[in-house]
Amino acid sequence: MKRPISKLFQSALLSAGLVAVAAVGTAMAQDPADAVKQRQSQMKEIGGAMKSIQAFVKDGKGTAAEVKTAAETVVTTGPKFEGLWPEGTAVGFGKSEAKAAIWTEMEKFAKGFQAMGQQAELLVKVADTGDRAAIGKQFGALYETCKSCHEAYHED
Ligand code: HEC
Image (cartoon, rainbow, N blue to C red; front, side, top):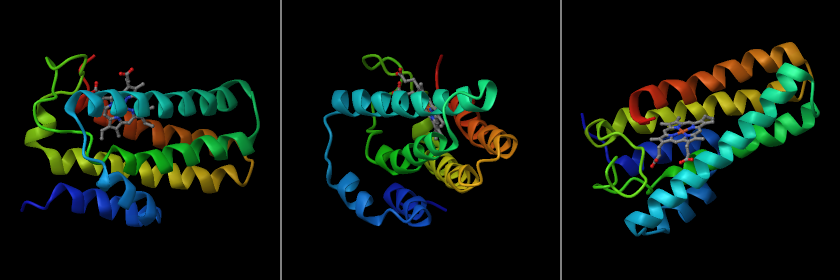
């Protein structure tokens, strides 16, 4: 069964309660080179957020409140990946590290962002408890969603 990609991203969005952000994301028609640049910079942003959470979990650096903010960054950035995967921007195009499989499995790929958003939302909630062990556990669950998508779709 094929569903339009935008529908998938939208359902991910609805679950995150970020409908307003969705409208903005969808409205952006992108030049392919810009799309690659933007998706990479967004990945870097969530990468930075994950690093700061990891520093709290592993070394007790920062606060649970900062973990919450970082997890919220992942939640709000997820839907912004919509529309940033135009055809022809797999590995070989500029500095893209996106595997060609993305374009044959777009539905599965989009679901990866959905999973990421859901686990990040859970981390936002767990951060409120301030319980470092519980935060560590949920951080692990969120990290798994990065890893499993990267294994399938990110060329290293
Ligand atoms: C649904 C798939 C998917 C998920 C989920 C995902 N990524 Fe990525 N990520 C990619 C792809 C594809 C690329 C390569 C993009 C490109 O080069 O065009 C990438 C690239 C990156 C990069 C390199 C950016 C650069 O060019 O310097 C970082 C860092 C990164 N991701 C971090 C994360 C983190 C952290 C998470 C989880 C919080 C995450 N990603 C979740 C697919 C995903």
